[in-house]
Image (cartoon, rainbow, N blue to C red; front, side, top):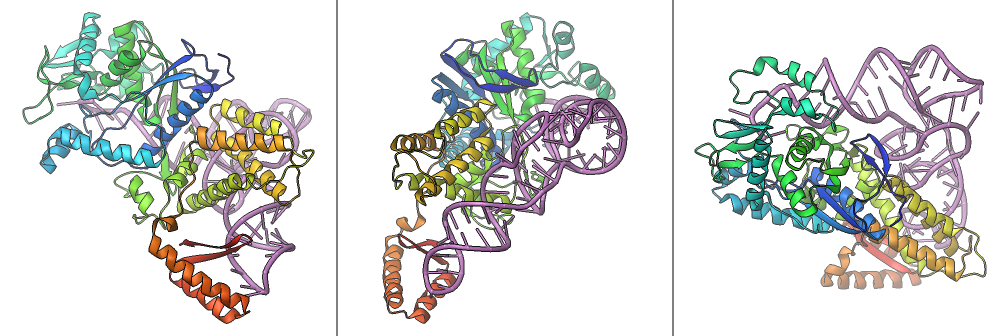
Length: 489
RNA sequence: GGUUUCGUGGCCGAGUGGUUAGGCAGCGGUCUGCAAAACCGUCUACAGCGGUUCGAAUCCGCUCGAAACCUCCA
């Protein structure tokens, strides 16, 4: 299968032509959430970024197997008192079974992703369901002599690995630097070097999530699940591995090391990383209190939010930045996206009202080519959106008789808009909130009828009084050529 | 301190050796009883200082500023 898609490979630090290992099949693995809290803005970006990759690859005709994991074990908190398991900690506090917590937040995560119109991955494996595979992988690494056991835990020997391979190949880290930075901390450590990472951790007595193994009752190291599950479902070598930039080191670096030892080859051909999100130019963090959950966005219930922002506004906003750029959330920026999105969607409706001409004054085929060009250049969604806004202007101008289009071109334009906006960008028209409430809708009908009568009688005082009173009550009246429309503030 | 990125107009964000990004806001216009909405048009920037070049926002160096990760038994 031919394509012209270039993606930025973190491994080579440059854009490379995407050539699948086994076309037309494509295997893609993306690091999913640790389910110990509600999905926030930080979760939306990788989900939407790789949803875009997934959708575009499918559009190009590839058969994509997209695997995105749920981390439900072994992810230790570094800010906890003594490295307590995040899931277990929450469970103890809430007096819930760990798996109850996992189920609850997994469901909530899925619900948020559905609202954002993020397609479900082909497989969504859980770490807790793949303990056997992970233990097998630890054994392979021990047999290769690249791991060592220490007080019931097993660690990966990074220094030894680095003698024959390059630890730091992905992140650009240099092992000597890591070594010199941490020299004085050795001694009381059960690890040989501070940068060695756990393959298996012995569980403390109070630790409720535990599984038996040759070394101890414990749980797998954090990096291991992705290596084990990607190999299981995509093969030892697959096409794309994605995730947030924050996972680049040590997580992905360690994945490469583990998989290379266990399977004698590097796991993924292309490593794609999405950038982080900031709010009002500030780092998003719990300590700063600007960590906004997705549901808070949708409801507008957060001190930092001036109003509610719909899921599609959030999605469109994220797509208006290229995935490798940092993205700054602010009320101003979101409101700009909200309006722009509405304008774009309105133009899609306007296409249906266009009247064809015998000749076209605009080159629609060229526009289509530009849209593909943008996507092929490392999924440059902001450029694509810019072209779609050009298309919107063409549509509106044609509707205003300032441009002309043939019937064929109108059809092509419709196809371009639908393909890129709905199929590839994954945007959806949003329902009018008014349609949901029959009573309000009926009341509005009565009020607007009264206003229409007043206007027919040129009783502007009454007409304006109704309009102003409604505005006070939070209802905005819009007089359009097609009639009177209204919406809640 | 180290690694990796980045610093673009009022705001958000593309681009990257010579030509309009785009959106929002503002401004002008069309429409309207008036206004809003909608639509059309319009504004012209690349942190600072050096250097390379016929030419740099784009390449190189330095300075300043920002972010993520690391320096912690994940």
